[in-house]
Image (cartoon, rainbow, N blue to C red):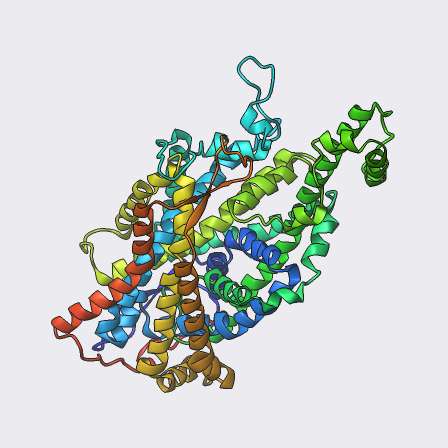
Length: 624
């Protein structure tokens, strides 16, 4: 398109129909305008991980110090790899399987591997949306169900599991998950989670049933609404007691921690996974672009928006973590103060948080034996701030605890879980597209089947398999998929992608393509990063990750009210059968690549096909 089409146009797509020539890709749907495309790209890249994963890494690795390796990884790994995926998808006009089989038939396994990885990630990702829906449905109650501990049947005391942990932890582990004490205990399906899972997949189907036509328009809401809520949470969180303690922790870098090589590995891994590289979604989305769309600008803009969102989201997150740490510190101090007052019959108010240390020293000098018998706890604000909270612990425990201390907590809860729902849904668009586009390109299903029927079948299979995550042990299963489905497979896939583009497709050919598509060849930065720096970083991170996993004991955290450490999680070893599943999840992608290459060789498909020059495509473009 020479200009952005008017917004009153009813169809989101139009057909790109080049002249009928051999080996030229068939007519392919196109984005109506650049805004649809950019919003769905931002929506896919900016997901729940920006809220719970990035702040966790900042907290683990010295606050602001983590931003140094993170930004280096963004510039030299994230942006160049996104540049490669967007440019090759736009140039070859296909999904992940079509792109790599077009370059060479033996590389079809890379597309299959990417499709399988998108399937495994999407399988558990929508379960998070399931949990969010459950919390959203409970956010209309007064008081919020995670605000207070429930009473026992005789209504004389609080339920012990809740009293020994917290109302938010109890609602999460018992009322939501009804979690078992180990992975080996199934626990049966939890009907309320099954209902929410069905609802989550119905919503995903409705929003993606007509491909980018429906998901492109849905992105106007799913990609923008979270920023409104984040800004509201920024204002609200700054009013909480102790919020400044969290912000000081975030913006006070501990540069000494940069000597730890694991910091650099996690920074490179985070920026890589955050952008959604390697699953085929970016290739699929860019394949619907006009041939002369400025994919170079897209790569830079989407990458910067994604990283800026992570940093912006960290401010309210750390304000809330500061509030949580302050609340825990105050609770600890109040308990100790009460013990001193009761033991020595002191007047109420004679011992306060501020005077506690001085009064303790006085009592300790006069009555050391009596003080030693008291069960006084060591209260330290820094220790509370250093207690890293990630994933579900951050979203469903720390955040919900902060909500009950805000004015009109129901409103904050509704806004927060609506935001998480939008973030998760927009990311699901990408995973569904990464799976559906190759399936349609391969023409696996009969031509008579409408796309909506194929989409319904895909969503139904997803939903049935995801029932595993609605068991009492479902949270443990999700942790396995979260830790291993998107680690080694994506690193391996993307390393192969960049090596193939540089050494098989040829960087010189890519440069000529880019000159035709955007008007100029890649500059020195792109050449250096794509040909040398990015592959080297990927290789180092991949090897370091494999070595780290191979030399460490695989464990998981279990919620066990009978444990002597309760309410702290119990650390358990994975059973042998689960380690076997982990190996399959991590290594299946590489097996697909090797087996597919062998099959193609046995079939005699070893000749590289002719790739028509880009001038044979529709040359219209969406103006930036």
